[in-house]
Image 1 (cartoon, rainbow, N blue to C red):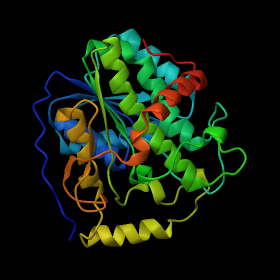
Image 2: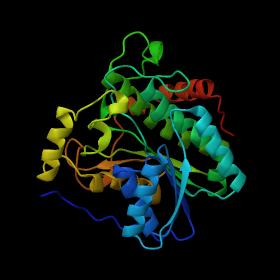
Image 3: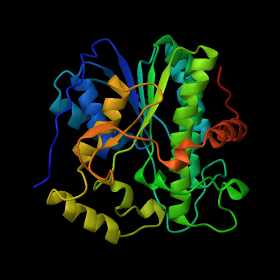
Image 4: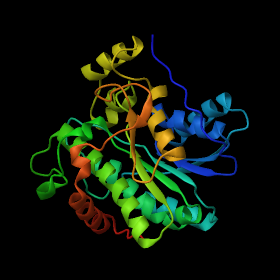
Length: 309
């Protein structure tokens, strides 16, 4: 049987939270949990119909849930800018933000609307640009920002000579790089906020391993069938072995964004960090490279045209 764990969230009445990737999987669970704790949840979605269906599921679980759908395609910097303009015009502070959405291992190299390798552009650059665009609202809310990395970030490095994998695309290595980038960004955001007095805190989390849509059939990514990996993960998850479930995988990010320490790292606690109850953990080697984090920040500003502060 799948294992379950409890995580009591504090009362978040009067707070606003933004969760990317909230239309399915872990993100949907995060949105429901935050709504249940009293937050108004902003749900930026790429597919409006899918977003409406997700919001209906949350409202069925949490009567009276306050949810606001917005359009967002993280693989388009124009779309990111448009959402930023909309929310800035509303002028309402944001208190919690989870940079959760992502894509994983297209079999063939794909690019974003701006010409970047899809995983780097969506998983990292889109979130970097969105956080930067919303910085005034995050500062107004003394926000805590949590960025999702992955167990894939346990090893590997930034491919500085070919960040967009134009010369020798490898789907898993490119995914690993994108998730290292997410972690380095979250940690560097913590350092830069402290140095500049932005008044926000930032930490990182990872969900372990769970049977989500990341490795399932995704025709738009060129993957017509479920991968063997996700079939194995589903079996292990159903039997409560080694890995988690979408419900348990959401917990580290929820812990990080509600009670986590500035600059902290949160993930499942079983050996190997693929499953188990959420808790703090030590940074993996690729995430301890402060020089890489600073370099990535500067490169990301150049690639997105978004500068913080």
